[in-house]
Length: 405
Image 1 (cartoon, rainbow, N blue to C red):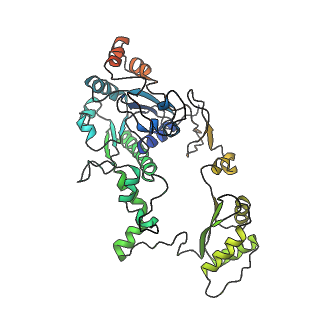
Image 2 (cartoon, helix red, strand yellow):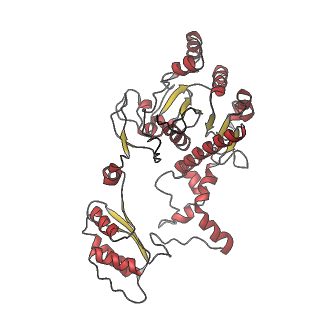
Image 3 (spheres, rainbow, N blue to C red):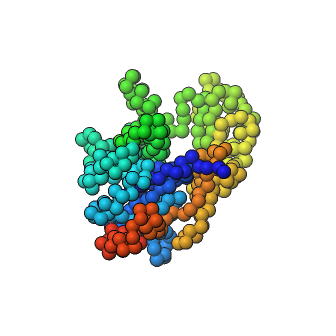
């Protein structure tokens, strides 16, 4: 029988928003049992960001939340309440990993730091994803993706607008990058524990993760004192490179020509005069490519260039990517039934294993959906104990005073 690689691993997931939930979604896709823990009074705010309009339970109907939290179970637990903390410490011995992305001081303020968790389970693995890390003068600052991006140095590469203000990328780029790094950190810690029998406490600063992506710019600044040069879509190592408008509404094609021979091959494929002045003029190449591609369907142009061996690709937006024939052929999109939402296409796992082909198994959990399963079934609490937690507001099946947005 085929098994996913993390089957048998249980993770207590205290993360919120994007970076942490994305990490635990990856781990859940690989077979781990991920228990998402939220307080009825301090739930994951992504639950109420862009919900379906006109629904009775917006906290169960957010597209963002359902994308980042599928394949998980939901346990509501107020860790700031003595009964909530006590219940969580009963769960820790049954978990392999605890992962959180609170501000650096929160876990210790809850009296749930690594030393406390290790008393509950000596080989526990703790991954902390504070934006600026657990140490240093900025450790207590709150860092969301856009802030992390600006402080990583990345904005020096993306350049400036006409008003001189730095551009950021179109998304909170630091979040998914940090999520991937956190997932890898969990795997490394599990391998370390398998070899040594020891747990681990991992301090993963999201700011530092993103900064590692621009190593080339750091080298240029450190060794040669160079500031980044903003070349737009060009690359000094390419014979020519750019992004060109094609036929249709906001349709574009990106391509790179490494050598003159590549230019000549692309020119033949697109019906362009390949002759060039000496030395070659990049602006002239851009003009000819733009003129030829303006009347071509982007998919047709992409296929022509691909047959000629030219690295090229369509610039797909979030609508057209859903109809991409290559992704459809690879069964990249999945639709999960959901009791509060209509089906929509979601991306499946990026990892395909010969031994097991991961496929989304369950929709993101409703708020507190698995309270009884975990509290009574896994922890062995009585119905009376669970009801006491409910009376005290430690658990719940809906957020307290939920807002939207």
